[in-house]
Image 1 (cartoon, rainbow, N blue to C red):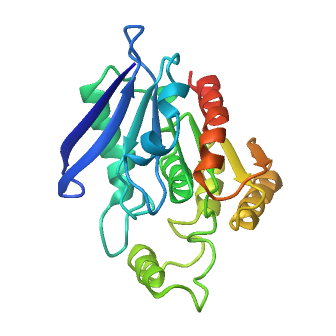
Image 2: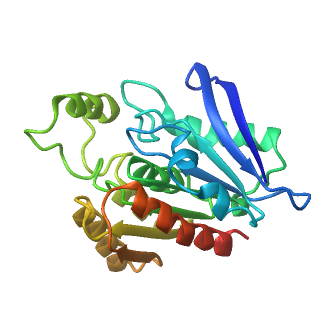
Amino acid sequence: MSFCQINWFSNTLRKAIDTWVILPNQGDGPFPVFYLLHGISDDHTSWMRRSRIEWYVRELPLIVVMPDGGRGFYTDHINGPKWGTYIAQELPDFIERTFPARKDAGGRAVGGLSMGGYGALRVALGNPGRYASVNCHSGPLDIGHVLQQSGKDPQWQAEREAMLGDSVPGGPFDLYELTKHCLEINKLPAIKIDHGTEDWLLPQARSYVAFLKELGIPHQYDEYPGDHNWDYWDTHIQEALQFHIKNLT
């Protein structure tokens, strides 16, 4: 396999941005693409530095794209950058122009951890029919679904306000609402969610999965021993890769 470090200009963000890409060395392509998103305190280098993702995909006919998502939750902010448009539209367009990547929805998958887990679901469900499959590790899945609680970190409150504005549950950041819309128009991606049993965000995952079950939406959900850390994510990205390979048509 080959590894590329790319710096390119995003018209959506109006700035230069870094992206890391793993390319298969065998086959002629075009290859399906897996967009792999980082968490809130990380960047585009984190999956390569802190996991064995390069080793895990060494024999797969798959392009892995690791973009920089800032602290933007991969969504268009009410008062700030359009991280959602950049990730869901501009980045795939750039990748498909630059590399031997498939240009159809059946060849696109997205996943991530923590902030990137929420972001992966928001990107896939907020762009119906654009991704074949989505996975979420340890995601904060009530973003946009519940109102902000008092007593939280002031910096996070300011970030959340810039992102959500006065948005209330049921708005464009609410995974529950996005899921219902995809179900109504029959454009749901294949969904995989996993969470560590010692992770403080576990109740949010259980609530969202109960919602999927209530609506009869097919999904895969797994709980494993582990916390909100790289030991957990490095282990379970392996199941996510197999899930995507099975669902990419």
